[in-house]
Length: 399
Image (cartoon, rainbow, N blue to C red; front, side, top):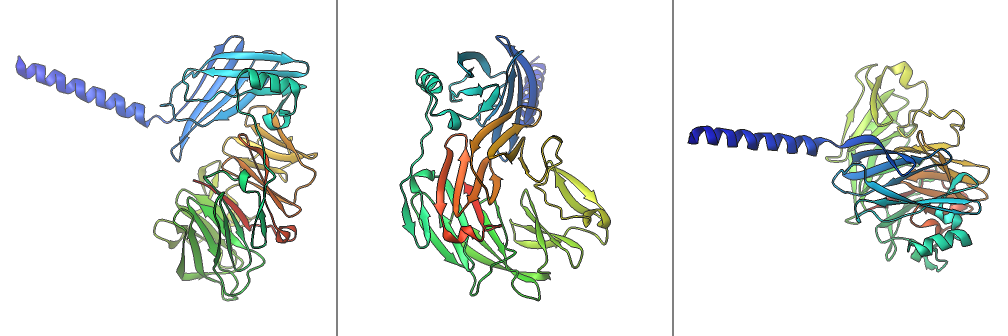
């Protein structure tokens, strides 16, 4: 009898462990449910330990879409109530969550177009709703400080943010309370700068030599340390960076018709393709292998996602994770895939822009701006050099 009891207990323990493991391994869900008269589509996934919820909330007249990043143990159906406000041409909702770990926020349509809180911050109707619900208001600072040739709007830089600027021979590292310059090269590198930021590292491929790329420099942002890699096999200077995926930087040598990848764990360079086959592309975070002819038909950048919204010009659009971002008629828009578009901010002209971790970085007339939902559009720094040279020389890192 005792032996049978021990066996039953052992079986139960194993079942509990299996159920726990299955629950732990499950990293995504997509469900639909209704709160009040609103239909809610809730999508959840985990990537790089970051927990993301995407929402589309709609009734017969209005649709809202937004994202929250919270680790709340993969809970489902996390919206329990929705507060609704209508004031003149403004219609807003405030989702109420089942946990206090998700902060309260407001989402609004102005004249039936979803509009950011940054653009609505001066609206009297919007301010009434914000104050009534004790929602954090967006504010920016114009206070500056000077470091070498750069003017820095120090109060607009959050404590975990780092902005990186290449300056011909070295790298400016701009934080909210610390400014550094690391000299890397002994002579200028002006054009065709091959650099990328992956994880906590900034990588620079030295392509000045006519004999090709022999050295790669990498800077550890967290530890403030600079090191050099001497490549065992040189890459032609006409090469370009395809993009980053997991712990690899992918590079294509146009002259030799080879694709390489640099492992940032051990800083070893390896060839990806085998003869004329098995060239690697990542689209929408999915691996695709193609032949030589298809691969070299055009430059392949992993950030060039397949555009499913044909109403937007692919020349204007960027995509990160689940969103399209595009600039049209002086307005920057963000659109959840299969969701509605949101007007984020207005800016008169743009020299260059990129998306990094849901932050929009913009270069306009020598000024770098950063936009995100929490802070709105803020000036970060100003440099005369950025008026004339801005392609692939700036980056961003958030710890």
